[in-house]
Length: 235
Ligand SMILES: [Zn+2]
Image (cartoon, rainbow, N blue to C red):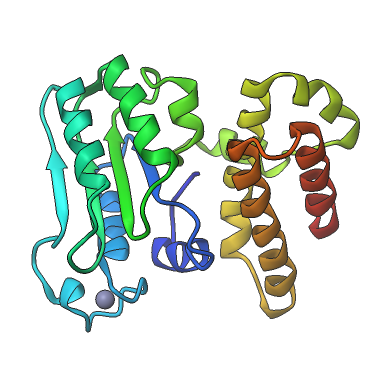
């Protein structure tokens, strides 16, 4: 996901379906992270400015993991805490370690695969290069990017004829979901009343397909074909 400009509006649109619970911020100066935290903490998920979380100076219910690296012990602690029911409001795990140990990543992956409601994971890293592909594929990524990458993403096409080959390779199929999210983001910001309904229909389809893909309840080929048709319809 690539961000600049009107982040507030972006969050409001993006979370309308309540889908994502685990996030990765790459190369963020803290600005996006802060907004995301405020958004997730709000009882109303709206930057309402009225609820207890919005009025608080600090982030209630947030646990911060900082330092050189996130170790397996930290990941186990997160796993344990994430499985406890929150007393009130959102529970947010904020991971700002420079490096995530491979075994910690495996535990983290298990934890974020089936999160409790109102439980969120916000990981900030300078680069996503050290993350395993399975973990990366389950994170909603916010990444600052250059103009040329942006132009390339906006032209992203998912062609029906490519799907047979894509579906053979799970990594490549997972990459499709990342590209679709990056492609959706600038679209969300330019919605008007006519295009919004169509787009929301697509977004609903998209999150349902993504969920089934990662749950492995349907064949990747079938899901990607559905996604390609759905995307074609709004282009
Ligand atoms: Zn609020």
